[in-house]
Amino acid sequence: MSGLIIQEETIKRYDDMRFRKTAGGLVLKINDETIEVESEELDGNFQTVVSALPENEPRYVLYDIPLKNRANIEVVKTVFVFWMPMESPVRLRMQYASSKTLIIKYFRGIAAQLQCEEKKELEMDKIIKQVYKTQGINN
Image 1 (tube, rainbow, N blue to C red):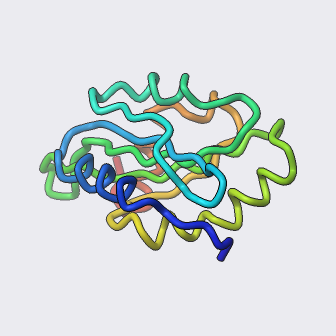
Image 2 (image 1 turned 90 degrees about the vertical axis):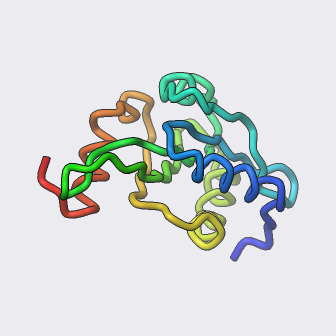
């Protein structure tokens, strides 16, 4: 582990988002020795989240996506996007990569994980396909 901690407030905001059962997300960043919320989008606009990501620094994104399960029932699934642009300084890339396991450990209910290096990879239809694939659903 990287020695970082996740603020209780960050976990609470994630839980609040997750239990709303609607589309929305959090962008997390490393600040000194903690992982904290940098921005929050609870109105279901994924493009707002994508546009908030810096071009040259990594971030973690936790986003709830409504979709249909195998029984064709509406459900909300959480996706973990590890934003790692190639232009990021090596030190930051290493710090974020070594702390990624903390996200998996503390934020329960993640249905799929993706690592993206370019914003063009962050299209909702591609992410939904990845979630379906991870969940074993052909759609």
